Each structure stands twice: as structure tokens, then as C-alpha cells.
Image 1 (tube, rainbow, N blue to C red):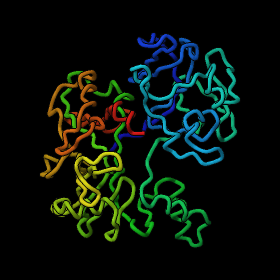
Image 2: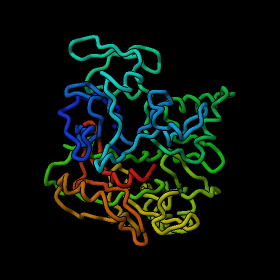
Image 3: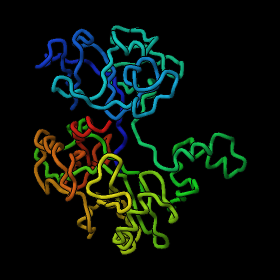
Image 4: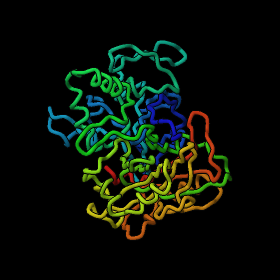
Length: 391
């Protein structure tokens, strides 16, 4: 299986605050694999704080209005891109995410009615649901605060939500309405460019951040490192009767003019490979995007495979299965070292014709295995230089 989502908003304890090397009024807080630049005086060692990871989207509340101030007219809805938490550099030091003190500062606005109720640092906080919740160190408060993971909408999703603004008018409609509400409606036939998927659809592909699982790999363990392509996730398979083309979450009909169907049209080897391997799912990235081209155009997109799922649930490397075009390989194989591999996240893309930074890297063990509370072991490191530009 793909990794379980761990994009959390955790209550963390502030360690010793380091002096910022280039600013007298700033400090650096490090925990896990992250570092955050803070204003001295906003935090104290052993304070409890809320840590919001990069690529989170905060709710449209006054507590976070500093993010979109002077970018959105008063009274207008604030788009996700302005509520997205990312990375920034302050005086040449990276700040990864947003840290809010429970004792002082804007977290008191995010938790307007929070009260310290016990000596063991347990807090009673009001969530978006208007109810009180007990929170303490280590808790995930994403749902309480209304913080979500940044996930760019795909074509068809808006149409899909519009269909549920009215109550269903048939038993079938109520069935799909229930699936939608439960979040398991991956085969919902939205019409237009989207269609119903295969009977047993392959999983949506996700890769979690290594910074959240720094101990998942054993030092020196033999690993393979590939470039993380910044594209549109695609999955394809032939079930023995029909060839399916899907984006990350939806399935695209043959009449669709989406970039996923165009990628298959200009790369006919994709369908040939799938028909030669019935039941196997081919995962990859389609380029270009709005920000990075990799030397391709929307009319003639490119495709880079990064994984294959066999009918029996085994994950295979694409190059072992005769796939023609795969993501660039940086290490094949090599020993795991966090510091050495983290340095590989930055640098130019290795895709021929690309003239820009790589998004980052993906690390997987040579011998496939699973990790408790994670699932399949394959993790990413996203380049801070890339995130800084991707705003």
C-alpha cells in the first residue's frame, strides 16, 4: 500500500532556541527534521506550540490574515494559494512551516478560548466545531483548527461538488451521495471528461516526507534515490477488457482532452505496455505544469514512470518491467545517510532538456518493506529552494 497520510498539525514542545547567525532579534527552533525561524520573545524553551507543516492550508480566519494581507481585497474569499503554508528564508536561514505559541502570539487567536487546565500542560481549546477539546503535547490538532493539506484541485472536482448541492433524487443518487460523504467515491462517474474507473481501482499514490519519519531507514541501508518530478500524477492499467487512464484521483474518458489523455496519445508505448501487462498499474508524472516544463509542451506532454503495482499487490521498479521512460535515478543503489541524501534534494533537474531546479528526491529501500504507522517505505525530501519558488 501507499504511505498513510501523516500531514498533521502537532502540539510540540519548544527545545532550546538557537541564536540566528544573521539577526539579533531572531532565533531558530529545531525539532524532528524541521527548523523554524522565530522572533525572540515569542517563544520560550519548554513552551507548548502548534506546528503547521509546509504545504498546509489554514482556514480563512483573522489569526492568519497576515498571510494574505494586501493580496486579497477586504470581503473577498481568500484562495488556497494565499492560505498555503510554505517555506521562506529569513536572513539566509530556512523557516519550514508555521509555529504558533500556545502561551502567546497568534495561536491565542487560533485557539481563542484555550485554557491551561492542568499542571501537566493539558489545554482545553475551542475548535471550529464550537466544542471544547482537551489537547496536550503530541496531539494532532489539524481538524480542531481546520487546517488541511494543500492538494491542487483536478479538472472535474468542482463539477463533482456542485452536483451535491441539492439532495439526491433517486436511490442510486443517495448511494453515491453516501460514498461521497464517506470519502470513498473514487469511481464516481462525473460525466464530461471523467468516467467510472475499473472495478477494483488501484490506490491513490502518496509519498510522505522523510522529515516526519527520520528513523524509518536504517543508517547504511541500501537504497535507491530517484528525482521527484513536479508534474501531474497519472495511473494507467488494462484490466483485460478496457484500457484506463487516470489522474491522481479521477479517471479520464477517451473523449477527454486532458493532459493525461494527451500524454497517452503522444506516448503510445504507455498503452502498449499496459496491454502487454494486464492487471498491472503504471504510475508516473505527466509534464509540463504551469510552472515547470521539463522541455515539453501541453500539446506534446511527456511521461516519466516511477512505480508499478502488480495484480498481487507487489510494488516493482519500472525499469525492471521494461518501461521505456522512467524518472531520473540519482543513486542506484547506495547507503542511506540522511545528511548525504538531503543534499541531493537541491540541484538542477536531470531530465534532458529541463532548465530548472528539481523538486526533490524520493528514497526507497532496495528490498521492499513496510514500517509500522507508515506502511510501505518510500519517502521524499522536497527541495526548500523549490518550495520557496512554488508559491
